[in-house]
Image (cartoon, rainbow, N blue to C red):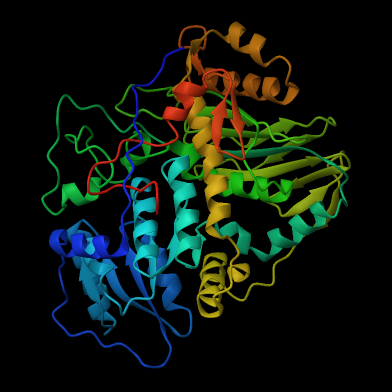
Length: 508
């Protein structure tokens, strides 16, 4: 098996006093040209960190909640920051703007940090914010690796902070009703959980050498905990998802949403005992490193999870995506999604007496006949309801008021990290070899058959362009470390080398 380069866990204890002192020395800020005006009416004051993409919805969502004000913005890209400042001015709202998160955290007038930075910054923003006495709302995946997620949960507890993960499906009222229905056993025993993300991802291109970093970006701050290396892609933004130093691939991008739902329904409060990945980057030759087509099995007992990623269209030359199709253990043929250019993502739970299909929010018997459809009673969109649950917990100081407490976010994100670790330790294998390895799992064999069929429709033959078969890895859930075969190599990928001073500490 191909093994990664050695990764040493850099351990550094950051005391609160030392953190603030270092921040004052190293921070860079860009203040708005007006003085801050803080209310004395018990408003919750929010700072949004990283808002070029999904962070913009954080701003919109918090602005809809009574008694909540967005009072500060932070982004390492000054163009993004300036745009946010202009939006504030246009609404006649007041706040502060920062390039450096460390300067923002010195402001005692900020109660909450809400962050949608790239993945590699999620943990450090959260740990530092907890140390600075702020509550945190952090996007999925909550971490870049398993070590980071555990440190985030530890920091929340040590500093008595309210920290919520951005797995907002837990605030969907219809889904909550469906989960209760399934967990009450009304469909019988759960047999297997299926999750999928079929979302078109075009080639990120290929460069011949280092690219110029946009002048508006503080590249040192943007890079943060990751290695400070030349930019080797055309697009700094978003394409960071598809390289390992900053991203976690599609299974770590959209995957945490579906994996969280699956783990929630299964009622599992730890990591699965085993994982294996089959996948690769097919259909184009570019600078991406993460798989664009992948199957992962996560061996919870007695009901495993099978998760699928497809980034190519339904067939070569088509703009539409596949719909999800599987034949369940009970013989039911399940289809989910719609043919079209939009993404098809979702969850299917197979039980003895039927199945649940998330996209229709309904349960069916094993012949596909509708049993029950679930309707929500939310007064606002799910993402706003999710933030409302967070604000409720910030006021009450009760973690039980959170719909997605940070430990839940850590565990669900860790499922994607486990799958990626298997992939990264894998090697290209012929279809026959893969079939032989997985022949003991009917669900995985069926999924691999559809995997190969999908790739053939896109002009990819696995006998000529083999998939990467990752090793079966065994996890000690209590210790959150791998054991058994390949454990030494796999445990090196639980964390990373951190670049000072952007170090996620061993002791938070």
